[in-house]
Image 1 (spheres, rainbow, N blue to C red):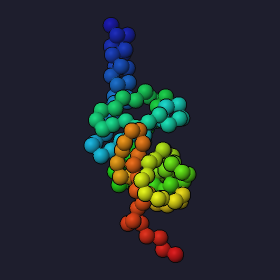
Image 2 (image 1 turned 180 degrees about the vertical axis):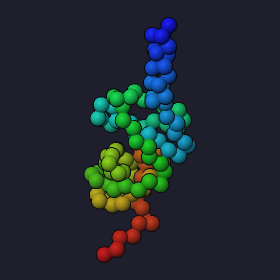
Image 3 (image 1 turned 45 degrees about the horizontal axis):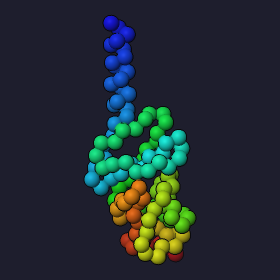
Image 4 (image 1 turned 120 degrees about the horizontal axis):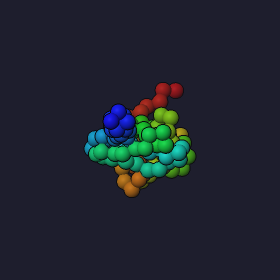
Length: 114
């Protein structure tokens, strides 16, 4: 009986660590075993503890275009898609999400002081 109770408690703990909720304008960037695996959300998302790492990203978050098609948001680098001419090193912000890519635009609110 004690072994069954312990098993039920472990299953509940595993599920509590695995489930996350993303709002309408938020996605989770998923890295499975250290490699980019796509975007999860909005809504309830299931992750495998220890194997998966996830980082929340929202519309309006700022980042920097590091390479062509790769944006750096904090400590993560993810594929991005941009329609306008954005140069490498430009400050970008998240505009939306489409087909496992993050839609970005040039951040015109950011003004660098020289």
